[in-house]
Each structure stands twice: as structure tokens, then as C-alpha cells.
View 1 (spheres, rainbow, N blue to C red):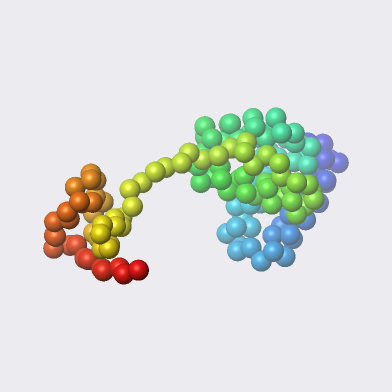
View 2: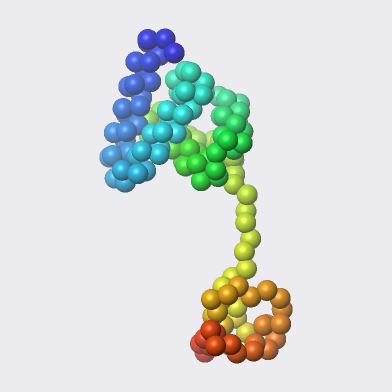
Length: 144
């Protein structure tokens, strides 16, 4: 970035940090949301107010390959906050990156008015028909 672009970035960055404080965000949130703005600025070496949808797609494609989904989601949220509260623009690119959906079995299985709680994850339909009590299992009766 040239000197004028750096001054503009510094101004936008300070407005971003101030907006985060005004919204009552936690210090850790301020840190990671600010890091997202710095990271995308360093990636393109120009002010983030000039990024296009294609720029953001490329940035997030690169980020998904090099960082965890947690980082990707935080960067998305940080940039969304930046667009909304600093640039006063609608964030129309939320669907650029979406973490994969992970399906897990529930820890609580319901069977004939009983809730079966067990510290282990149950797999298979056998518990849904006739649960066999184990020492670690608790039964709670649920009435409607």
C-alpha cells in the first residue's frame, strides 16, 4: 500500500476497533475481528473497503486451505461486522463460505415416555425398542 492507502486503512481500522468497543464486544472478540481485517488487508495489500465479491471468494478459498474452520468463521464474522458498522454496507456475501455440517448422534434417546441418559454414545436401533439397563444409565419419566 502506498502512504495514502495506509492512512485510509489506519482510519478505517480505528473506526472498526471503536465500533467494536461501542457494541460492547469482549476483548477477545475485538482482537479476532480486528485480526480478520488486518489479515485480508495483508492478503491483498490494499484497503479492505475496495474488495469485490470475487476478492472475498478468493481470500476465503485460500483461508479454508490454510486455517481451521473456526478461524474462517471468525474472519467471516469480523469482516461482516466491518462492512456493516464501518463501511455502512450490506454484507451480501455471507454464503461465500459455509462450514460443513457435522451430524452427531444425540446423547439423549427417547423411548416410550422415558429419557435414557448414558455417558456413552449409543449406536443402533436396539435401544429404541427395549433398552437394557446398565449401571451408568439413568431413566427419567416424562409425562405430557
